[in-house]
Image (cartoon, rainbow, N blue to C red; front, side, top):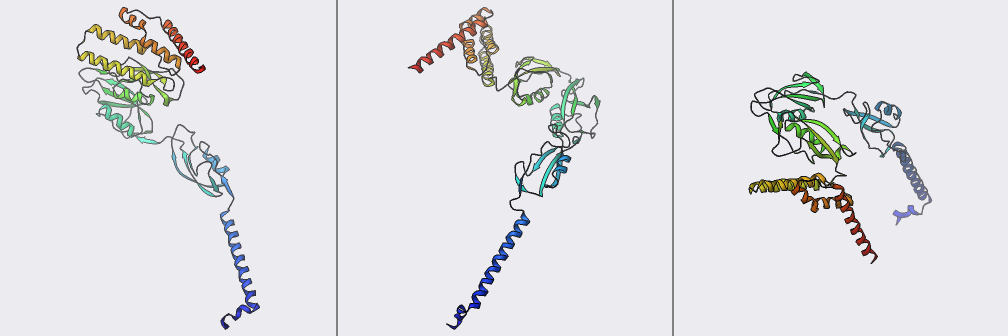
Length: 354
């Protein structure tokens, strides 16, 4: 028991209290120093720097962040010399002095080398241009024995040699051979194609973009082809390099699904009738029927237009038009549709009251 005699001595407890007090002091000092070092609770919210002038941001926020410029890119969507990308992202909470990584919009477009497109097929040349960040501006067909072979390449009206450094995204005019046989090509069916794909589809078919018309007002991403001129027909041939005009409608306003379905139905039925060798007057009757429906239906989403479309498709007046080759009074068809809608609405209201 002598080993525990120190527990009865006053000096032991005094020393124990001193040790505990020192431990508390050391811990408090450590935590205080750590808070000071890490600036705990001193977080700031990162602003949105994207689109702002890079030099101005660096000067104004030099005390808040350690800016590091990682790279520069060329884009037409933001001003030159502005910030294209940032990390940390806007609205993030960070400590002062945090590294801020940014990508800047270069003040000059990225430069690329002009490839050699001569003697390539048109399709190969288009693929090579795209791979090098360049675009086709126009196709010009010239006398040459190889059809659709690239004879020469031009930039801003002048012949451009392979290896020449030009701005990325530049438009290149291709001189393409007519060939020695038929100088015509089939029209591609552009109906319902998205605006972003139209020019490429025309160029692949050895044709050029003509005039563009926008019936609705919307973003480019919503536009799809509603009509083209010359009109598409599986048998129609046009001269190489011809221009095709297109009309766009917004897919938010126009029912392209139903529109395409009617067009597909027409082609399928006509092909079937031709295989069965039905009389020409029967084929003409069906063709006229589909043409009338497609031309006069509205293909819009509102209930009145839907009802109108039903009457155009199934009205007896329509069949009289086909047989007699006489024009229908469209206004009367519309009035019939409105009367039918009123009756339907009236019946619905009666049911609700019951």
